[in-house]
Length: 327
Length: 263
Figure: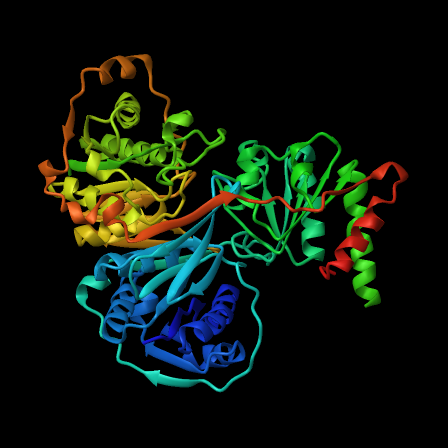
């Protein structure tokens, strides 16, 4: 078979942005594999998910409904995806390159004796094979990899593709979810949700505004947050700011934090040590604001502003608000 | 309950160093950079030591890779307080991808009787995070990954798994493979006494044949993935720099954001 599958990431049927990006990618890849994009939906909330999957151009779906996928960690997904891949042998499956997606992909690969590629920044088809692009050594090197045999299991980084709508009617094929006792060993007992002011998560945000040592004080993150909110962005932080206890580690961008590639990355008061560059070098557009014209961050920007962030940021936030209001 | 804990560790190039690939076989030129014990693995070692202190038992450090540096990684963990080391070293393993590494480690782990297998959920170099789940799969064990606050009670392990919105509380039966998330704890520094004591702690060196590794599943030949090309990322950024001397930089920046359709 030559279909390109996407394992849908969702929360009770609310599909994630990265899923929409993968559906878009699958659509273009399928043109070259001679197959169709197919959404693989496991869990609860199909009626909610259906419309969103159709909206991003996927006319076929394989659906296994059941609460086992919600109540137990990863293994039910591993079992169901393994069974489907073994039975139908698609060209490949795209997974979101986030912890949950990578876990399922690598375990399916180990179970079926297949290869897996994590963290792909781009995927193309050459002949019948996938060519996946990676960023290595902190983004300074591009590596292209392929897999020796299919079905190809490929994890794609959030924001590697831009989601494009192409409304279509979804034909769903319902399959039975039969989950073994073995796959029910790790139970999700509780989900603890922290309030974070409704900002997007750093990992998958399209825009990130990050603060560093130049802020001088944890309370100065307010100016970063204000700009982030105006741009509907996530707030990131450099290692220096996190080590100083100014911002939680979950927001850290860099070699010892998150590796991100948003559409827009704004570095505020961050000098740009290799440790930080490693985490954000593959961002589509990079802007830096720093008072030191010699800061290494300026070597890798599309647009840089030399000046006092406390002067510039509030005015910039106001200016953006004004322009958005003016249409 | 005394716990028999294994911790899988690897060395990684120092996070502050520049790295390069060996142009011959596209593997990391590990001689070209300083290396350290993967910081996330250090947190896994710390978690193991805390569990040992609470429950009694033994901590075994397992590592695979060439002589020398891997041995240093094991020594570091022993100096922190682990009890013994197992070092899998074999020329046939060179060029193994993440899955082959997980397979090889699983063969070593099958030789012991461990209640708990800890790993860093990711390494600071490759960062693929593929090894712990693949290891669990090869061992047929439950996997709790990207977790902190690991607790053992009544033959079960519970932990907090980091999510986008907070954390999930997860629980599984022992034995299990547990991947520790970055920042789970503050690893202890080896004491002088610990460093001295580590020198007399046993480290067993095993070959691939010792643990019955199927040669077709490891090394460059066993890798399912292959590198077909690599090169320096061309830095084609515009580097348009403005100075805020005139106090108008925010206008220029807003213009830029608008041109690029971010506003």
